Image 1 (cartoon, chains in turn brown, orange):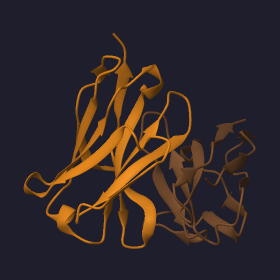
Image 2 (spheres, chains in turn orange, red):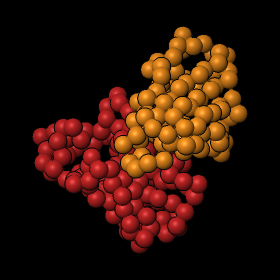
Image 3 (cartoon, helix red, strand yellow):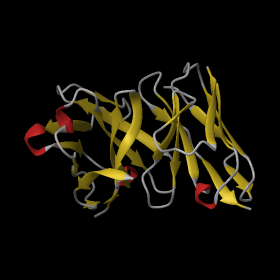
Image 4 (cartoon, chains in turn red, green):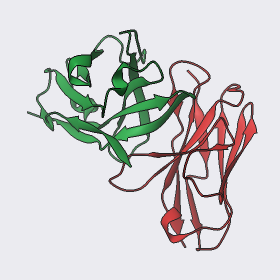
Length: 107
Length: 120
């Protein structure tokens, strides 16, 4: 199965700062990668799919890039509601797999 | 955010069968646009994909759980269900039902999550 490795595990930033999260795949997933946001006690929310397409209703401060094995989620200017855990997910190969997550916390 | 409605017990005894149900709004469970899935999250950990069912009844399961898992659909009730047999403490997790959209195997719609604890 494809292993997705996210880094860093924790990102400590202040509101208004730029966040850059990484997801690396153990083999190419082409552009078949998504990003989710999860807040405590809630289900994940889809932010980005196919590496760079924003899901409906997602603010444009969220952007995704990359292809093959290296992907990035960028939050251009952190809002208070953006502090959460972020997961990547690939749909290139079965079984579907998720990364271990990056926690974005308030500095 | 949760648009699917989950139900089922939060406590299961070791060696027994975990059973959860997810109710889908409207008649969309009959639509060929969606794949109905289960995903779990161990306490404080990441997400693990369990499997899916299509409206036709076709299924695919994570090989790591394949021998113990089954997912079924009941169109008359707009529901799909998860059964996981021979549970142990390692199956303690929050279980989510989720569905894709026509775009592909990404999860646009989620249930609220059910914490299932395996304990005697």
